[in-house]
Image (cartoon, rainbow, N blue to C red; front, top):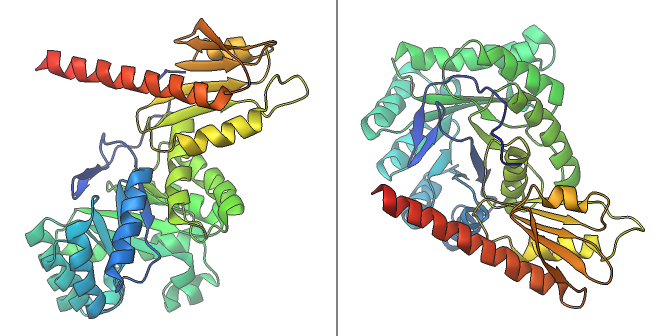
Length: 371
């Protein structure tokens, strides 16, 4: 349960999006994007704070106009996490948000316009220590590539990315990351695998426009899971037609399942059957909702009967095994106490929070001793 991930990550150049390192030996970061009107500063800040509370490392904000750029500046001053400005076409917007403290520019150099405009944006990024994200999308490929390939393909996505990369290479600007997103899993995976062998820069993973909460989660998990298993990917965004907070939750669950990140509670729970001695599903729903605020890594098993319960519990920090007349609780793999069904969720939540505090105190003591 506590073993390190066997995945060997692709070696990549490290950049910094504000305080968050991306690439190299940095943990794979989780991103999301606001869907509020950027001109509504209060609503956008509120959503960013919700995303940060859910665990987002980086948040992207669309900046389509100069008015939105000014609003972005006010948003940035109130943000608890680094912000990426999503900009298309108008290079002056990029120059303005660079002045206002943006942490990363999401642009495609090819759609900024003339070489002198690209040079101006790159100079602003260089002078302010701002990395650039090149974002290629199957739905907005250049017209000549659409004509050349007939339809979006992995090769077309990579050729588009390499065009934009060439712009930055000519200007000797290596601090960028790249995404080659498609809504088709095979297309996206093929493009990322190809691009991963061509450049040293970090890769931003995503299956774009993946769908609603359920279907988008499945599609993203398959596509991003294939790439992450290959060791490809330095930062991820799960694109869902849902509350952006759900994107963050799914992203972290994905990384936790591959042992690439440890943040919050890793639940192991049975699907329940007629052998269960308590209502596993309602218990899990309640625990997940109540314990969303916990960021300390912890393994918790919730198993409805004694068939697999003791075995799972022995590998977790807190384990619950269904039994009659009372359910057995394991702490650090050892039987500790029994809980009846009457106040099961309340009692189990308390045990979990006690274990969280214990782990946090132990970590704090370790830090003090190392000083």
